[in-house]
Length: 347
Length: 213
Image 1 (cartoon, each protein chain N blue to C red):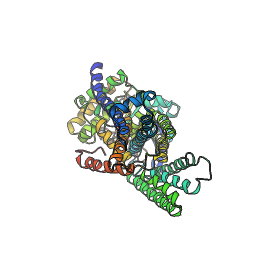
Image 2: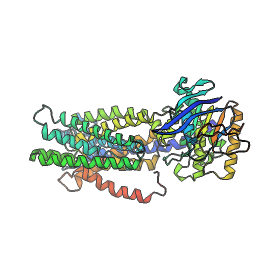
Image 3: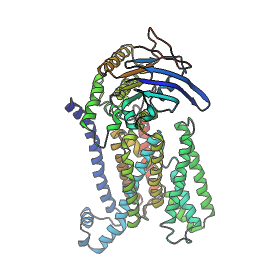
Image 4: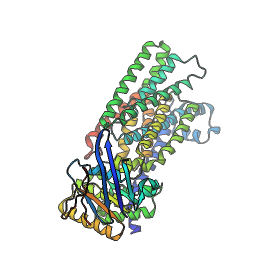
């Protein structure tokens, strides 16, 4: 009996673990390819040896790999993981397949916050670019999250209401962002455009470090609630009767999502589609046991952005294409395929 | 285990649904019946602790509020009326969630074997690896029932458990609930809206109760 139960579950869980490990190893390959591509193509040998033993490689190779390409390649991974996980959490918490940090306006809010700081604050406060801009982006995305959360808590607010409220918020912050562009001078507009397109090129080891710390702190806090989040997918009443404090779980989730999204947007600008598409892919592969679903969403987000980073360098040789444009290019056909190919939807 | 509600009142905003309801559920199976919108589901949601009504609910003579949260969760299991879910989970995983309280990062052998027991009790063990969204309405209902018995509750509150079940499965379900109830002596199954002969309506307001055993 016991043995049978174990083998049934072992089979279910084993397959999921396999997908996690497979995706993780593809990411390692993608990062290496990402470092290899660029204005000067590097060979696999030189990249691997420079990464593994930085001391022994020649100085120009060292500079290209360690100073320029590796922070960008790793930033793609960390940002993608943050956005993928935030999207997966959001879809679970709002019980809605359309929810993502981008479609509900959190990215726009963060972008507006950053633009506000760019137009009003930079040059006034020391370290403004590294401190004030991300901080403002964070505050506004939190504000946006709370607005959506308030809408979600209104009596009998259906999931459609929440998405509509999110879209209203999206338009509001988008128009405020346009207002900022209207008010700003050319340099400021340049900085704002950076937010709107999304770009990994400004990645540095410091920014990467901050972002990595945020992801490494937030992810375990999210994973503590993995079982509860899975239970929430069985319906709110069922979750409550099993002892889940649904309101608290939602609020906590919202705060964590806004931290992940705000940090990501603050460093690389608004990158669409990752948070929306990635959870659907991982749901198809491993289902919604959140112990597997959330990590796989993070890994797929990382992989998608890593591939986008590679493509951004090879689409137009010599020019780095805006990454936010590419994620949409990759994401849209995939998303449409997803919508039309599923036999019986999960939603 | 004896479940007793005294002078229970509950209102959604200004709309009173339960007004001074008193019921006693002795060990064994109790059914609650009443017309549509009588407040049967609301009563069950109050009894399982999701809603906080006025009045008192006693479980074995002890007030619900006096129970620690974990004890209460362990003792009472609630099957919502509309429990269909399109979560991307296999049947086994969904039933496993019924044991949420004892689940930790790794799943224990006990949780696994109780989950399989619940599936076997309902005769749906061959569905274990099937995703929920590939099931029929009746199969989904069986999964929900398995989920609510997986934690071996002392009190099992089921809201319209026979929804979308065919006649044979309805009868089998009643037999199963009786068997489980007898096996655990203390158990108390409670199912609303199942009119049966020899009923005695005791509700004092809009909630009517039918006793059967």
